[in-house]
Image (cartoon, rainbow, N blue to C red):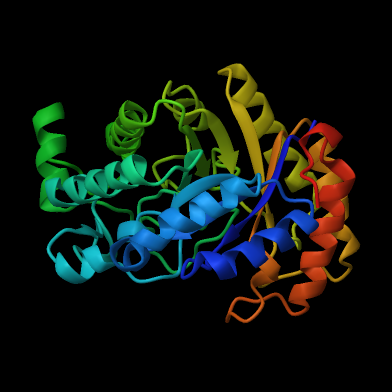
Length: 348
């Protein structure tokens, strides 16, 4: 049964304008919103983030804070102030030694920065929860897709990661992905998520933590190796309340949608967590918009509890807008209305 429907939202400037957008979301059968917060937003617009959150909650919407693209460790198109100010704290390609456009979350500088950000948000912003948006190691390769790509390079093998690895395993960090390197990367990737979630809950105990990982098959032959590919390892963490998997391109076969959704629902149930699936509501749209409804109903039938789409109004007005953005938005709203359980619908 679908209990929650929502979209991501970038409009973080003025609460009086956001209210009109929130009403439009409610009219499109949303009962929740993910606020996509860039480092600039948090640094510059912080007072209005508080007011916009209050406005959304006053209208009945659940509000989740998305630390969108912070350090380019999370998913997101925007730039990173941390990387601008801390050029020496980047992830590094294992094979070439090239610094990459992403912060290494094993460095003390980035962890201190990130923890201060989430503690500030938890203390002052009365949101219902936090959304960890596609956290990942950078992929230093030319081919990267939802089904994976063939390449040998990986990250991060910066001096900090090399030292931490040698301290734990007693020998220098290899340049190939040995089982020990894979395990080290996964453990460190989860360590920062776990610590940040604990700090949030220490300040705001009722905060719901949603962790959204890439919707990859991660089969024996093809895997992205982003650090969060072992879904069991992610979902069993006690400080994660909802296990979520990200968008699937509409051009992929329905069997792929079914496979990802079944695995998502099953793993969430295995560890007593809520489940969530995401829909593409920007950039690429299906040839027949009816497929949006087909996918939404499929998710409902397979036991998905929370449905979100990226992004509000189909990205209308952005470079990532769907070709028929407002039609996509209207179709999504109709689909939400068809599957959202009546007791969870907000009054329009």
